[in-house]
Length: 107
Image (cartoon, rainbow, N blue to C red; front, side, top):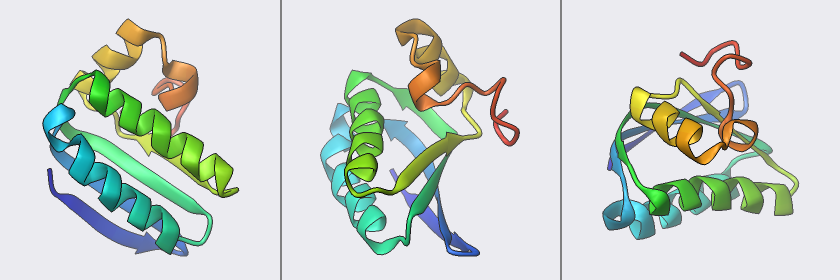
């Protein structure tokens, strides 16, 4: 899964493309943690390009949010794809992974 990075006024914007499953989780974990260590205090993950998501991918998103909190940083998720929305709904994780109805820039 490719990750595109953009700096927006000190905030790191990451866009994920493709599958976020057990097959990509290990590689993505390393990339996301490295990005977290490079940012000042906030990362936004654009999830519009995620077309496959399993519980390993959900665990990775939750772990990244927890690690950011441990480092007194912030991770937000935006532009949820239909696949991500389905997982959020199924697992009742809107409060943790972002509720697109409450996030202005989410779809």
